[in-house]
Length: 252
Image (cartoon, rainbow, N blue to C red):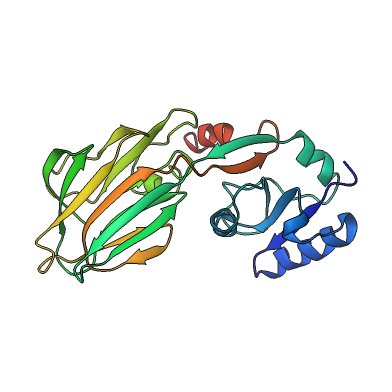
């Protein structure tokens, strides 16, 4: 364990940079191509960035930021042993394809969620299809999002969406400030589903799409599916994995 090859990545905060320096000095820092594990020091924003940029290597995060749902608690002591004892959780991202008014298509991956948001003063009008079948002719709303289980405690939860347990193989479709149908809050979809949004009256009611903060303006339609060919490996201390975090979040 003492010889574990670690690559440290820190956010720009003073606490994260200092932690990276201290841990690198104590345990050694190797280039990414030589590493066995990535140690991310920051908050959930850094973790998402690391996951988007690195595939294959397991990532062990320690919280040196503000929001740390995906991070373990910070401690300098016994880091190789903690990593060796950590439980691994696999996360598949969502793949978004968005068609825009200029005739182009834009693709992006999202580990948390893909969201559609109104881009003007008027509410968005969206038609929703699942696996090629129209399930809702018209949703008038500020927006809608599709969330993974790992992202279900982020924007989805703030929009009153459900928390999804890992391993459930489902996705959360959540409306954001629905006006019509007023009482519709969303739906639970199987992770194998392909979801499509078609924007109605795009000139009058412009809509933008967002995949983990990667925005696309003036969308006409958006298709979303689970990208099963990509699996991100997250490491959590025993008893502090995502399942426990999801449970704790519901009783705050």
